[in-house]
Structure formats: C-alpha cells, structure tokens
Image 1: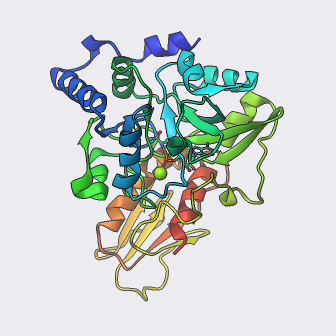
Image 2: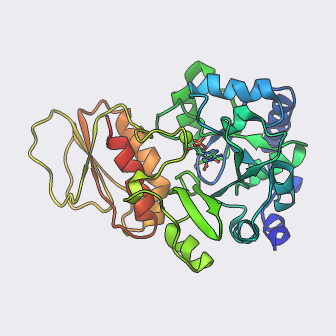
Length: 335
Ligand code: TXA
Ligand code: MG
C-alpha cells in the first residue's frame, strides 16, 4: 500500500526542473557534510539535519534557540525505514502509518538505541513521520540517513509555511532553503503515542481528530481536559506567537469599538471590511477549514509585519481542523 503512495508522488528525477535538481543536489551535499537545510513539507518548513550526525543535530537547537528538553521529529522516506529508528512498534502504529503516510501524522514510539538523547531529549521514545512533499521525499531518497527537523523558525515564533518566512524568522542564521513553494496544509503534523491498545493525542495538527478516530474506530485518549491543554514534552503552552498581541474572540460579526490605533481582524469569513490602517484577513471565503488551516500562519506572518497594535482572531467552529486551528490561536494569544 505504501509503495503505491510513493510511486504516485513525483520523486523521479524527470518530474523536476533543472533548478530543482540542482537545488536537490546542493541540499544533499550540505546535509552529507553536516550542515543544516530548510526543507519543504506539506505541513510547515523544517530545519533539517542528518539524524545520525550529533554535531548537526545540536546545531538545530543552537540555530532555533530551542531548549534542549524539547525533542525532535525524525523524518523517514519509507515505512520500511521505521525499524531503523523505532522498536516494539504496535500493530496499530503500523496500520496508521500505512494509511496516513506520507502525511501529517507523527508517531511516538520506543526509540532504537542509536537515536541520540539529543534528538529524544532524554526520553526513551522517538517521534517519527514520513512527510508528503515530492522534493523532500526525493531528497530523503538521495540520503542514507533520516532527517531530524523541527519547524524552521526561531523557538516559540510562528511556524514558516513559505520560504520567506524561514528567512524572516531565522535571519542570518537561515540555512540553504530548498524551495518547495507554500506548504499545502500549513499546520504542523498531528502527534500521537500508544498506551496499551489506546492512541494518545499529544498535539492537534493537520490531520483532524475526526479522521484519526474514524480510522481507529475509537476515541483518542486525551489526558488533560480541553484540547487546547494538550502538549508534548518540552513544548510550552505559549507557542506559535506573533509579536503583536493577539486576542481570541468567539465571533467577529462586526468590528469592535476602535479604541486601539491599528487593529487586525483574523476571521474565517469576512462579515465587514475596514479601511487602512486597519486590516481584515479572511481565511476562507467558503468557510472551508482546510483552506483556513493552510492560510493561518501566512496570515499571522502578514499581520505581524504590519505593525498593528492588536490582532483580534475569531475562534473557528469546533469541528474538523477547527480544533487544530483554535489550539494554535489559543497558544498565540498567551503573552
Ligand atoms: O509538521 C511537523 O511536525 C513539522 C515538520 C517540519 O515535520 N515539525 C514540527 O517539529 O512541528 P517541532 O519540533 O516544531 O515540533 C515537534 C513536536 C514538539 O512539540 C515535541 O515536543 C514533540 O514533537 N516530540 C518530539 N519527540 C517527542 C517524544 N519523544 N514524545 C513526545 N513528543 C515529542
Ligand atoms: Mg515548532
């Protein structure tokens, strides 16, 4: 089943332009020599390094300003590579991987002994996924090691869904960026782990809870109350933050009283317009939550660059990807 997926993705050399092939060669050379490369995925851009090169892995933490207690995700090119990084893999984990990979689902599994404590932040587990982007799959196919990659932004800032977001966030520390255009899904992967026969949700993300639960046939185990309270080890509640203060509100059918100087409104569907210096950004004209998810971070990056005094963000309907978007908006609202 998995081989069908891979064959359907255009990883063969002939489907890339000369420029893309040159960029792939360059990215592979850099990674082979222990350097970092920003890679496109369907979720967000990642800051990638050779998972088996300890200095390169450490460079990721230094470049992002990431605390060492926040573990990294290992990216593999095929389901058959899963054994290289994880062990004691539950049957259900295989079924999930077979069904959803390549795609935005990260599995927390027992790690193989050679996965370093730097990657796993000392935990006995490792996070693994197979990303769904033709360029990055082609890159992984040219390498004989998996890639560790957190999102390619400074720690706690908004994740990058376009190459220029990587440049803006990392500045002079930005590595070579493999340009794969805007990310199709635009939210980080959903992270799950396994306890006995149950699937535990660690992070809401681009794969909706509904889709997962439909496949598993039973509810996900959520350990804390309220989906916005879930978090993986090392990740703080405050996360994904714009520099501009962001206030989460239930509905934005009309503008709020204009007490501040410059106000940005982030809404699912536009119910009003305002003249500059204010700004209204609509995430999906049709009210489509997948489209809204794919545009969320670009909208936050855009608003953050406008020197607004405050951003009012409207809560999304609590279904499908609405819950994942609300999780990010909630975190963005924490000061
Ligand atoms: O979509 C994505 O997942 C993107 C792309 C680049 O693949 N990556 C990403 O990485 O979002 P990052 O580092 O920004 O988030 C990884 C999350 C962190 O919250 C971390 O705590 C969690 O994964 N994580 C990693 N290893 C873990 C483990 N062993 N147990 C629990 N959580 C883990
Ligand atoms: Mg991140």
